Amino acid sequence: MSLRRHIRLCNDYRPERFMPLWRGATRIGLVRRDNAEALRRFPDVFAVAPDGVRLVAAGDCAALTAAIDRVVERLLDVGRIAAWRNESFAVGACWGAPPIFKLDRGAVPFFGVRAYGVHLNGYRHQGDVLELWIGRRAPDKKVAPDKLDNLVAGGIGNGHGLFETLVKEAQEEASLPADLIAEAVAAGALSYRMETSQGVRDDVLFLYDLEVPLAFTPRNTDGEIVAFEPMSATAVVERVRRSDDFKFNVNLVIIDFALRHGLVTPDDPEYLDLVLGLHRPLD
Amino acid sequence: MSLRRHIRLCNDYRPERFMPLWRGATRIGLVRRDNAEALRRFPDVFAVAPDGVRLVAAGDCAALTAAIDRVVERLLDVGRIAAWRNESFAVGACWGAPPIFKLDRGAVPFFGVRAYGVHLNGYRHQGDVLELWIGRRAPDKKVAPDKLDNLVAGGIGNGHGLFETLVKEAQEEASLPADLIAEAVAAGALSYRMETSQGVRDDVLFLYDLEVPLAFTPRNTDGEIVAFEPMSATAVVERVRRSDDFKFNVNLVIIDFALRHGLVTPDDPEYLDLVLGLHRPLD
Image (cartoon, rainbow over all chains, first blue to last red; front, side, top):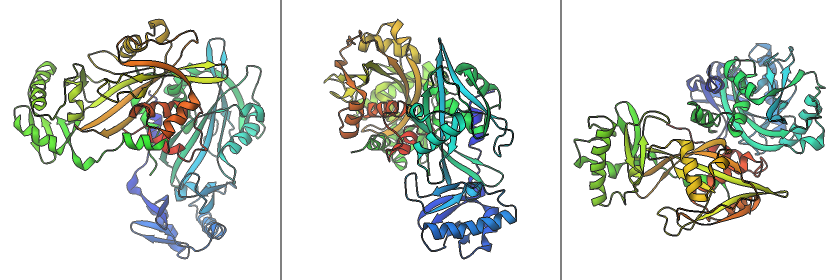
């Protein structure tokens, strides 16, 4: 078993199956070819050509959002999209750009728009042992039920900023108080592009590390995590290497942590593939 | 001024100006088209075709090294290569693979073979201030004279391993004793591909962090660094942002350090370009 296989799994993407989604001269998504065919029914919103799909509806962000929501409703009816998630993700030209429209999280893979998340590695020093706080996801989670997870993680949506999302999720998921989460240290980002049953995840995760006091025990309040446990970071990395116990993208967050903290070293024949593979260039 | 410009400078590469250098089915280098023409004089060693150069000489690593050294000698005579560096770099299919031949460091850009280096960020906590030890390169250095540098840096050559190189350079460049350098923490790697007057640098740098005791003052013994100074890490990052005082690739090492330690945060509009741009995929 290897660490690199997790990067391969999260980058299982066949470009020939997808077409660009354009707004003007800006590519804003990736639509699977069979999904593009399903968009031909909405010519007032999307123009489907052999080489791409164009968002042609007129109007401002609110008008486009409403028009696309109506399309999503009908794609739900025909089973192309599984469910509303009732969480809106901003779709823009790039991170930080003003939103062109907002899209329900449930429709994000169908349109292959880039989604942004934030993950927090909560660690502590128990004597000489570096430990990571690991959560177990609830069995009723839509994505990756029962899998192991970071101390805090969440998608950046509903108009919240990045750090605001981190503070909110830290409170809801782990009861981390605001003054503690304020100590979190930005530690980079990772990217991957991964086909799913409904389309493609084109994800960027912002990464934070937080040293959690020994006296603090995380407690979930939103029902998304059933239990937290501190585990030795070395054991966590070995478990990532040898199992699929962690949520698919959490493996990547832990590999990144391991690389930054010397838990995986250049002696590992996969080292360069790991360091470079976690950072898929955006296009 | 921006941080990203340093990444752009280190990735100033026009692929159309270069041809692959092949050994069998393995690409081992990148030869500029005008340099490839100069290799036509050595048909017993290189076969030059419109779409690439092939290393056709027969023999084992020692025989190939000798044959290529003879070519290098004649390229020196005609000014295509500036000087012997008297340091041999292993050329292989990838990091860790057995060497196909060894090449003098001075000829590395001509053949565009991948070179590997190691850089160490030496840091300390002076009260609440995170400081980095910064060296100034000697005025007679062939590359980047007078520029600012990391505490320790060096190319991986002469048959030394990665950590062995780090220990050796730490001793020569900064008088860091072996028991202190043993505490260095592997923290990742970065990659770039940059045209030079003689060809192209296709470099991978392995990165280490080391917390240096307050009582320790580095002292150079090999004449490559004229002075060391501890500087606040925040000031170092701002100096990288606003000046070209640092050696071209040291800027990248410091940007990487800044990203890992929260000195540059996602508020920076360049953040994702920095995180992803430091990690050029190997091809």
